[in-house]
Image (tube, helix red, strand yellow):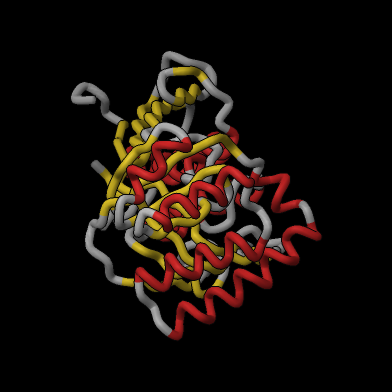
Length: 288
């Protein structure tokens, strides 16, 4: 990028949700979710550069030209002329790791820097949050990814509007296994399912605030997984296998995926697919 006059690079961690409750609003900045989740050190790197050689903006995801509607909406809002966006996703896509939010947030940070837009971190992130809400790809990933760590979402809304806190944790190892995606938009659009999810999510948040610890987050996430009824038999069996090996585990919302911590949990997950291990990210979105 040394020869580029208008370019910038941003990094955004992935984010997995343990439990949540959705909050709807006609105004995208007010819509969002409450709950709790972990930012992980595997994330997304986004490079944005001005591109006077092209007529329309090009967005590449892992080297492939893509529509990327969430990131594209951010570009259309912030870019001054056509740009070339290159996002490398180092997390599973469509399985609850906040990939679309990471790409959109990285775009917002990089565009803000490249074009000197003068937005604060919350100002840039709010635009990414709006794009997520309007495309029905997420409700609470961006505000957590903007912060890093073990993030408690106390009140819904975009960064700068919603209210969050963090539970201090070291960069602990987290293992996970992914079977496949779950359609976030389909789940969020099912009123019957969401009624059950929201009741369980609000209850979990109240319990977490009574004892805000990493262990309690894991326990409440596991309880939420069983109560809300979103987990597949595969996921429930994987969770039980981790617990039998002395660890703690839960479903990743919203994906057919399981994360685990402690004991011989990583070893136990091997019977359910390819196991990956990363760490809790201590930093949120930032410029590289």
